[in-house]
Image (cartoon, rainbow, N blue to C red; front, side, top):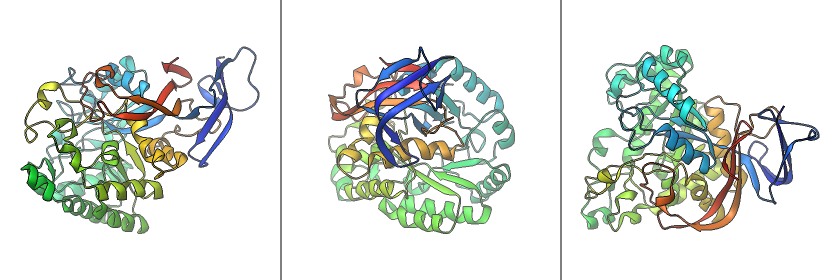
Length: 421
């Protein structure tokens, strides 16, 4: 029997919404009650914060197909260094994860190479082409935790409604990318005066609202379980609030970069700030952060999207979209804690408890019997981000050179230390 006794820790309990000085006992990889047994390893937390490990929904690991961008080994190391103990991986690989055979390959590679838990998603339609739905039941049996075509929005409403109906019958979670695809095609930034001054093709924020309205209507028709991967505009929030008030089984997330940056950050045509959807106005960023604080937006994720140097060293309009975020998620999220927008316990609800609940996982809490997936961090430790020191194979982070606060001191997965120390 192995045991760890964490002492002198500020325990962050997102379920109770409390932060209190105390001890935590781990026995055989599970949070336990009672006095520490003789011989237990003692970890003196020095008054730092101990919280459930982050559960990150929507991570891209580029296996199969583009292993030079990110592998399960490198993504796992980055996650551990960032306090992320569970990652739900996207199916937008090459080929797409759309058959049980590909899913089982991914699961085997992850089990061998990654020090953190890896839960694969599967594509909703074959090849993510939006024409024919995948074998959702077989993929569920093979271990798929959710179904998504990622940023390839299904334009055929009949195909999407049938997929939602089938998913509803199986209790499967569908994750949608709420951007109207025709309006969004070819866009590099959010439309407006700033985009015009920079000569960049833009998309209206209404593209997000239009796509969300369509998906909500289909949820009313089918009763499916649904998660919007990124809500980034103030215009989408009233529709989301109405859908929740009407009892639909809908949750929503936001990527960390949309919580911490705005459209002005692309001023120097820095392609590390090119994201999908594009960065929004500061008013949108503030509204979305406040929606996290109120609980309207349930989940914060990294939307980790590795891109190699060649795909980013291009003119802004031609460069690939996306940024890495596994290792920077925790200190970046702490920005909206330090500025007073979101209390720490509420922030951890969005980072850990809510994503765990949405995926039906027992982690994300500090209750007895929960897995000992934990992160110890110094909430105020300052540092300057240096992208060359990231564990990810790709280093396309918009935080390069940024002053940040919040450093991970240790990460444990099922009671085993995987980072820090």
